[in-house]
Image (cartoon, helix red, strand yellow):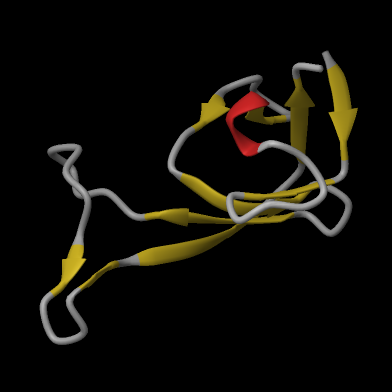
Length: 78
């Protein structure tokens, strides 16, 4: 595993399917991530309801996202 500072589902600089994201403080893995900057301390992820289902915005017909601030560790399996 290698730690990196930035990753995005859409591509560069790495292959997304090899990434895992964790909160530094708790070690908890974060799922549904779209983009993350461990350097700047934010991640963009899909939002889920209490029942675990993705939340869909019926007006715009898209899945709702949320920006989360914190200290993150991105692990990349090379």
